[in-house]
Length: 44
Image 1 (cartoon, rainbow, N blue to C red):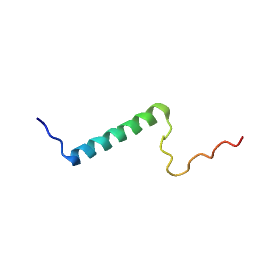
Image 2 (image 1 turned 180 degrees about the vertical axis):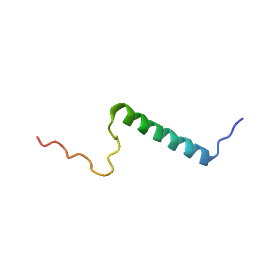
Image 3 (image 1 turned 90 degrees about the vertical axis):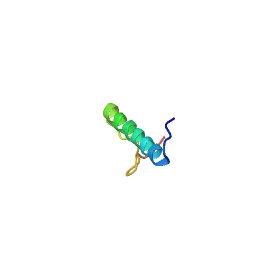
Image 4 (image 1 turned 135 degrees about the vertical axis):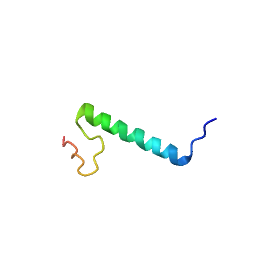
């Protein structure tokens, strides 16, 4: 049985997360993570 070390698990999780972000940006052209300047909420 193959056992995964914690380091490999974290690396795969990070790789999957990065792949999801890249796919999102490629499809929608929008960065889903607004770290720098989040859009201001629309005033009613």
